[in-house]
Image (cartoon, rainbow, N blue to C red):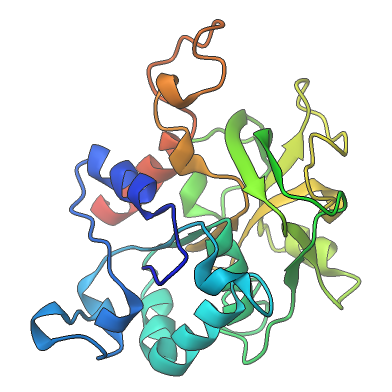
Length: 261
């Protein structure tokens, strides 16, 4: 799903296309009735929803806030039903920010909270951080998006964001996420250990890089798996990276396994 300002929809589209899906890039106007009849779509017709990265609506007010408000006003009923049908929803970078603004994450109490209970705040460095980031899969099996990534395995997904620090008024946010098995990825160093900046590019507490909802079918993460689909999009592809697939493809394989299963 896209609006003005999203800019990673092509890479996300390609990730699904590579794995044999039939993806479609759909503007929000096509789903909320503000498009010619021949172009209109229904969320119910799809098996997976992806909210790509970018700077939707220029990230005015807060990152992802305008896109989330437009979705909530037009599609909240359809989107809640989509999630409750256990269909996968993935939000990457700006998409993660949108899912949090929507209340689909962390969603401790209900499918979609009426108000955001967390936010992705400005990086501790107060600047845009663009770098390869190493992530450790810390999920214990709740999240469907990591079925192809063994627990404890370290993967490389690039990061490119200015507002990626997960914060909440709830002082127990990270503990509650951990207790519910909602923490999916943490930033780590080359030894697989939590090490702070620059390995954690934003200062997110406990190095949290990605979380899921309690049901495990909604994932938000700041780094970009769709930018690491093959060895040729890995920063070390000329320096000993020997796998033909990039690390990011495993996330999309996990989604396809769930849909086909």
